[in-house]
Length: 115
Length: 112
Image 1: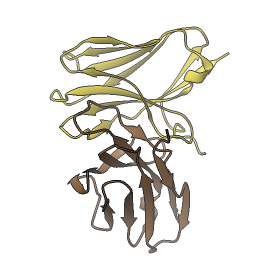
Image 2: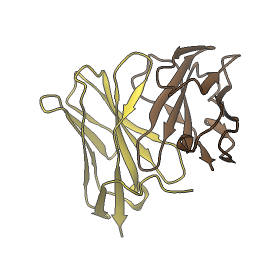
Image 3: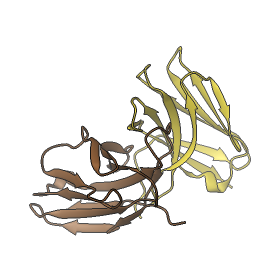
């Protein structure tokens, strides 16, 4: 029983570059979430998917951030024209459905460093 | 991996003692309150949750208390073990869809 898998685990890029972060949720989980965690802070909601559609993208900070989940399984978070302030750990989580109270299954995160 | 707890409040506990971690929340409309544990370099791990219509819930070695009058949530860990050393976050579920709002976290250090 594999958990949530995120790749890459670490990504170093230069300011202005484009970055893709991938999330492979637990098999059968229909809901998928992206969070961002800065050092010393709690995770901050970005977006969640129910199936293929983005049910709530209110946490995306601006239009440089975009996420897709074309087949209802793997998701990719895309960041254009990266800025130093984008440096953080990007966490992906999944759950069997959105009717659950609060148990999300998190991956280990992708640490993004923008130089 | 780099620790996520470098600038967090820290609770130092002797192994075998009980730990109490506190959290204040702001939204009275939250449906669930949840505690997560995060070890260095890892993602948060669910510990226990409590519905807003309850005031206490017990799990294995953990108890969550909810005081809606003062908007306060606490996590009690019995007989704290070295493996309990981590950063603990409280979170609220304010709306359908498991969109969680996390608090700032408390680092727990267990001394042998």
